[in-house]
Amino acid sequence: MPQDFTLGIEEEYLLVDRETLDLAIAPEGLMEACQRDIEGQVSPEFLQCQIEIGTAVCADIHAARADLRRLRSTIAKNAAEYGLAPIAASCHPFSAWREQHHTNKPRYNELRRDLGGVARRLLICGMHVHVGLEAPELRTDIVNQLTYFLPHLLAMSASSPFWQGDDTGLASYRLTVFDNLPRTGLPPRFNSWGEYERTVRILVDLGLIEDSSKIWWDLRPSARFPTIEARICDVSPRLETTLSIAALIQSLTRFLWRLKGRNQRWRIYDNFLVAENRWRAQRYGIGGGLIDFGRREVVPFAELLDEIIELVAEDAEALGCLKEVEAARTAIETGTSADRQRRVYRESIEAEKPHDAALRDVVLHLIEEFHADL
Image (cartoon, rainbow, N blue to C red; front, side, top):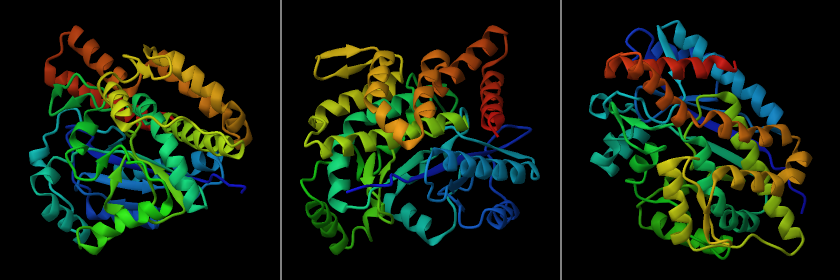
């Protein structure tokens, strides 16, 4: 059946004080101003220093760009009136999680009770991309196949190398924190939509979760919309990086749907193997290469990305997002956000700035990148 492959993008931001560059609590007036300007598309997040936005249902990447730019610009403008600035990085370079407090709302109070000490460390932000697929059975089938590409998406989005003032050695430390939650990681394989629903129903009937929104896999059928939701990515400082990754997810979804129409499919590998690539992406970003299981060798990321772009070029053309998909190669030239943050830190240290000042330069860099495409 024809599909429209609509797009929806959700992003979580951290709010920082423009003078100290420390994390800051979102003032009530800021949230009221944002909700007035972009009603229904902005909300508090788990921690008081976070804010979340979500685009409308977008017909294509061009509509997504316009809406996401409007949302980012509105948050930035209103935050500036309170001496604050948003950054779109998955971890703040130096702030301590022990000093943050969760938002006093029923949903977040319940999460704090359910997750105990694990919840306190959730000083992380992510990006979620929804792609519209009407048929439930198709959603299950596409999730099974798209799982293979999740490490590639994570590698490109990596934006969390620092944690509480230390260089973790990882490109995406966010995932290390998030994986401490239950019901996270790669999605298990389901043979049908019915099998998926029955599995979720067991936990719902036991009163352990109210619905599948409390299942936080890297990729899942959405609990609220007729979409699949890719959740593995770090949030990207640059607007155009977000759009490039979203376009790639949309094009991969259409590519797998197109294969199905030809009675073909992408080979499904055991999660044990995909998880090895997930770790490599988490650790090295685009710098360490990923395993090509068909060739049985670690292949440079640039080569893998070229292969993916070639695979989905027809689909990206049909969706009107070929330019955005091809722009994914920018990461090969400039590095990921994690690479750029480390570069800023290194240059500051080479300029004989102390460690704390170098980390503040990283935050200034993240503020600049957030505003660059607005």
